[in-house]
Amino acid sequence: MRLTTRGRYAVTAMLDLALHGADGPISLADISQRQEISLSYLEQLFAKLRQNELVTSVRGPGGGYRLARSGESINVAEIIDAVNESIDATSCSGKGNCQSGGVCLTHHLWDDLSQQIHRFLSGISLDSLVHQQEVRLVVLRQAEESEMS
Amino acid sequence: MRLTTRGRYAVTAMLDLALHGADGPISLADISQRQEISLSYLEQLFAKLRQNELVTSVRGPGGGYRLARSGESINVAEIIDAVNESIDATSCSGKGNCQSGGVCLTHHLWDDLSQQIHRFLSGISLDSLVHQQEVRLVVLRQAEESEMS
DNA sequence: ATTTACTTGACTAAAATAGTCGGTCTTTGC
DNA sequence: GCAAAGACCGACTATTTTAGTCAAGTAAAT
Image 1 (cartoon, each protein chain N blue to C red):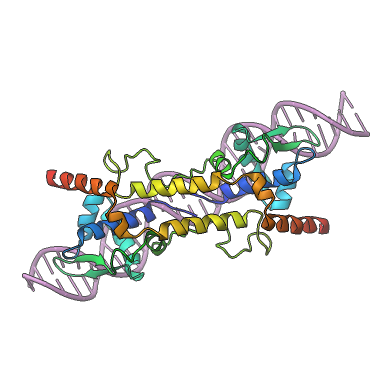
Image 2 (image 1 turned 45 degrees about the vertical axis):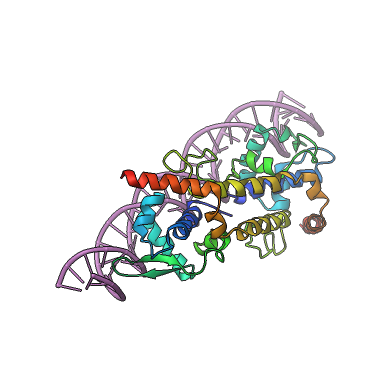
């Protein structure tokens, strides 16, 4: 299992869209500045998010990305999935052939853990994050920072 | 956050000790054969497990390792910790300085997830694994396999 | 037409993983 | 006392993944 900056960046960027995308598409340059994520790296991530139909793009001046569905219907687990970070904790990717055809001693444990994590993350929608106190505070700070520059 | 073969191997090896260590120390060679883990790699892992006082060693012929405490009092979270696989899912290692001194947009989410995982894994003792039906079945299969060779 | 911005693919440095290898030190049993 | 078993230690390495750069497009709006 891995949960690295890739998945974290993807969720952060999607949350940025949910927060600022109310009126019109958001450019990757904006997200890059607000969330301090390399622009070229965002391009890579959004290619996958688009393939997985989590965002739609608008080309040309004033263009950018917007959420493909409502923030209510998009959960964190599917964002992480979209950028190829499996939440699976087993070594056999759930296939159950971790030791010479059968399951290994701890297969069941990792399987349980995977389900636990998946249940947790898929229960969290972008909308629910938008409404969190902790998130709102960060949004305010980011707004101040952007005024200064 | 990472959960890779290192943490999985460590838990598997510790469970092997809990299962077979009732009468006398278990050699790494035994564990290596039963669990199909490279002997040299096990040595690395057990160095850390010993430093963290999860196992004690007995040198010389007939020697090996045994659990330092009862299987009831050792939980999976501390085993994974011992081999340096942090369960923390935040990018700032919980420090809260993920974005220019403050927290990033999704810090709280990863913090929550980390706690969730930690609570789950620290609630599982080696003993509770020993008594699981799924584990017992694998133990039987492994016993058969070792008879054949 | 020109500008803006998305799109694609190839490429790369750095880190982590998953080991290997060779040797040393201790203890037990013959 | 000596040989073998097995823990212990450190250095070394191939592979993979991550995180990111760079350059060359393509599409759409003004």
